[in-house]
Length: 256
Image (cartoon, rainbow, N blue to C red; front, side):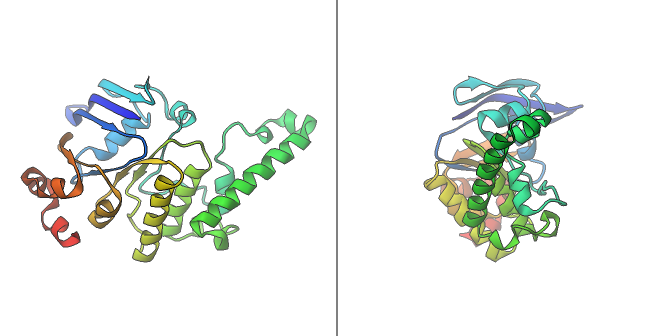
């Protein structure tokens, strides 16, 4: 589904991503781990089209997409979330979801005047999909609450819901566990697993919570200093001396 070949990204004299190459197979949940400053989020930004790499290639669904904008990639089914949720805080949770689908006829002034029946039918369909997402995420009780008033965990669930309002094929999740209490984190894990196993979503997951990585991810890729150190199953990665030295230490042993 996704192929990265020798990606490089420099900021001035600092090399944030250094010849990164790996593949993501359809239907998997790939874990991307490593210490702070390893280049994980920069790599996500390259994949999601936030900026082009200095060199290297990105292929998505067999198509060369290197340098395409985030908007163009969104329309191809590549969607990302952020460590700090980017909700429209003055809109309700329901309205946040209804904002997502592109090319809604109600966005046209003329359609609102000349084709109001089509606009109304399209909005009803989008609202129905939004309610289905809220029900799946167990957020119907906050549907009419302003998104800015939601808890950190609820905002992360809402971000996941926004990916459900698109034709997403690949979802990049940037530290979904950050700022989430353990109860909502378990719920978030369950929803990611269901979306993967029952609805066919493919995920790449940046995360420091090794328990979450162990439960959800295969394969696991570890980065350090902008490079890929190792790729494999969780047990293989956690036992590699380079990984232990670079980042994980006793954390993995405790999580296991």
